[in-house]
Length: 256
Image (cartoon, rainbow, N blue to C red; front, side, top):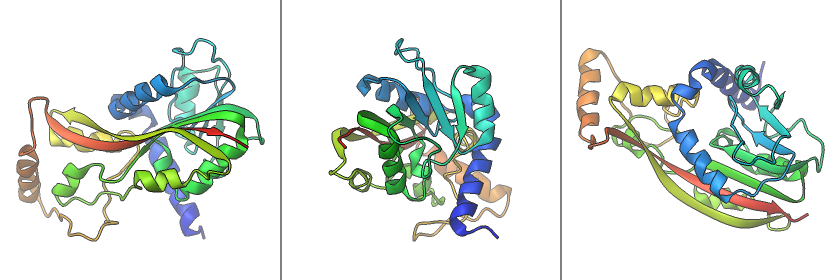
């Protein structure tokens, strides 16, 4: 029988593998966050894309050719190899990286590490594989994300605060060069598309069982669904129905 942690990892891997083929149809948030990370990065190689999903183009940095990609979902890695055949793809857990000590110059992780059950361990693993002086760049979904869904009394995962994320970086071995949390809002034509955007990247951040101490919606039929749609429509603006993520961006350097 799998332990709770192993079962959680298995569930995450399954969800993201199942979403591999649809990922690029729903990755607006990921692309927006990536652009902000790119503006802050000064990468050298080899570069580790941690929680790589179906892959990221690093052609903006024309000197980066040695890219190692790690993801827990085999389905994502199969899609990645179709688009980025020169990348090295490894199936692995961010909390137990299949890489040697001091073997990586730059770590890049975009909207992935919030799914780790033990974020401090994942950060420690990143430190282990980085060279001294190596750069860590990540975007992580933070607390109070998806508040529009919470306002509808839908069950939403609890994400860590910026302070909690920052505390994962031990001052003895890390120097934090930049950290900030930005609200990124994505807009949708309809509520079904909004919900599909979450499922479509494998995230499933709207849970059947709440991790929050609040009431939740039980849909008993088409009437309840219509009431939910009507309430969601109250937030519609000129660009469509909004869904807001608070993303913590962090750049840190390994000091020893």
